[in-house]
Image (cartoon, protein in one colour):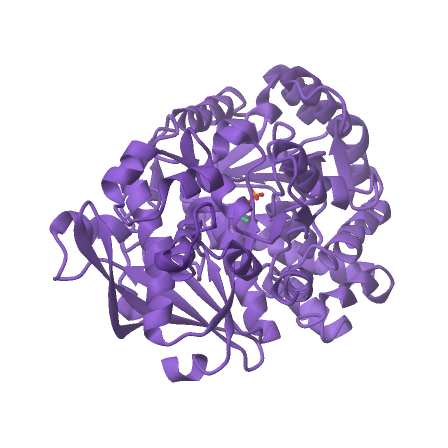
Length: 565
Ligand SMILES: *Cc1c(COP(=O)(O)O)cnc(C)c1O
């Protein structure tokens, strides 16, 4: 099977996490889902790529919640043999002074036509390795900083070596976030000049050649979010003979900054939305940062009733999601409404099954689900409980929430407890459900079954955000802070609504007031009193946003602007 993939030169796409499919727990959130959608589009479009990631045998974690909203975490193991085939080649990287052996699993993603996309899952759980080293590819984002560094060595350095051992001919590398930037260190080694040929002061490595081969997508809008490792740790863990002066020149004097390393060794650098690219240019002066805005995979993020609708009225949308721009005039209102009613019923049934909460199909559902972490401000809607209750008394609404907090993110866990406290306080006045163990399947049920999709991050920390794009694919408008993709996607009253402005102070109080005002005076009155205008906004979300914010457009642009240059 591998033979099918090694004949033509390929683009190697490296990502710490990839959401291959819902029952394979090798992802934690948006970054992994984006990586999965990237490859699903690559498969649909039959782009010559190969992806590399960790096998993460113990998954991210399975979330359970007690009545108070305390998060309980259990390992979420999976068996790679159930979905992938073991590859023979084996290579080693030296970690802590001893060889750590790595083998790969071949997982194949299939497109809707004949496209097949190989994904190599790196695995250190081999008899040859010590029990500690066997665990290096067990837990996604688990362990301490040294575990993390070792994982990134396996991913970056191990990944490049294994691709070579498998016989792949790689013409371009693409780093999805800085986690895989050590791949560039392996390329330094590969493209170093013979010492005896060098005169003093001449470069040791063929940097232009490496830069020509490397592409980097940054996802972090603040310095604090970037992966960094102290040099003493690096030197202890990775004694690999790379010239330290060169490394510090590339990755920063104080710490090894993975973002800097990736920036300095990539000719093509991309931010994930226009605003994020601008921000990255000020964060990293002197670098050219492109702006190919993220998108989501059409077929994956359309619920069955809308897929049937598009098949009927906009044949070919799976390959050319641009066709969705015709939704406005080519799909009758009643059919859109009927498709939404079915999606809403499905969500209501799922909420009942998971939580025993009974939602009313006649009342609007607000959806909010994402990684629970402070900057996403899941609690903004609950900033003033009495105000929210007063709004709901006049114009009833219901809320469905979901999201996991990283096991070491105390602030994120606190957030889940705050939400549960709000649920209790509002009981009898607003029906609210919190679904446990947020994953792709719950995400699809929520973004299609809700009536309104909410996003309330603290600007400018949401580099892109993608769940609102998924909602648009299902005719669900967004009510969102103007950050990330929504700065490009929001046409007020046409595709959804903005909370605050893109320039005003992003303080909790201001944004909460703006959120309540919009809900009370604009969104809910439209929902209750102007069905045809509401349907126009639903169709606006499809025709103006789903037609654009999809991963087919994103990948066609990466192909023409980054991979072929
Ligand atoms: C889409 C998705 C995300 C990312 O959503 P954001 O809006 O970018 O926060 C996270 N987790 C899952 C399971 C998703 O499907």
